[in-house]
Length: 248
Image 1: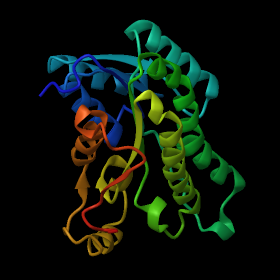
Image 2 (image 1 turned 60 degrees about the horizontal axis):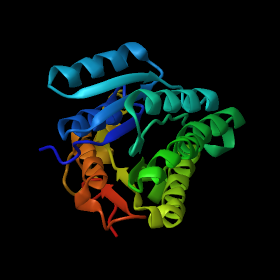
Image 3 (image 1 turned 90 degrees about the vertical axis):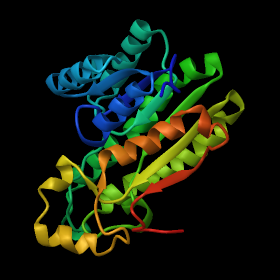
C-alpha cells in the first residue's frame, strides 16, 4: 500500500506509543516521516525501524513544551524535506490529581503540552500546506476529552480543547483543500497505561463492549486513513477508536 507516496508527514511524540505506531504506519504507506520528540535516541531507533523496512524518515528533536523548539524543528524539517503536508499532533502528558488538590503548575503543563503545542505546530506548518493547496492535520484527542474522568480535569480539558481546535480550524482552512480531523482513542495498551494497577485495568475493560484494550496500531490505521485521499471529504470530524466505550 503506497497511498501516501509523495507526502511528507510530521508526527509529534513519535518516539513511543501511539506516535511511534503512527510514524510506522504512515511510512509503510509511502510517506516520508519527520519524527519529532524530546528523546533523540528513541527517535533514532524508530527511524532505523522505518528505514530498515524500506521507508524514509528523519529525526528532529522537539520539546513541544518549548515554542522556540517547535518553530526551529518544523523550519528545519521543511528545509530538509521540502515541505510538510501531513501533521499528526500526538504528543501529550498526564499529571493526574483531583481538582481540589491539583497544583496550578500541573494544570498549566498539561494544557500547554497537550493543547497549546498543537496550536503552535499548526501555525508553523500551515503556510507549507496552503502554498500547495493540500494538507492533512490529525489531532490525537481522547475518549476522556469527550466523557471526562475523575482525577484528570487538566487532561480532559486539554483533549476537549483539541476537539474544539479541530472543528474551528477545519472551517478556517477548508477552502485551501486542507482537512482537519481528530482521532479519539479509548483505553489503549501503551507505556502510559502499562503501569496502571491490574484492578483498575480490569474495571476499565468492563466498560468496553469489545472487551479488551485497543492497540496502538489500531489508532495509527485510523490516523493514516484520515491522512489519505480516501478521507478527502471528511473534515471537522472526531473518529472514535474506543471499542465502543463511548458511542454516539
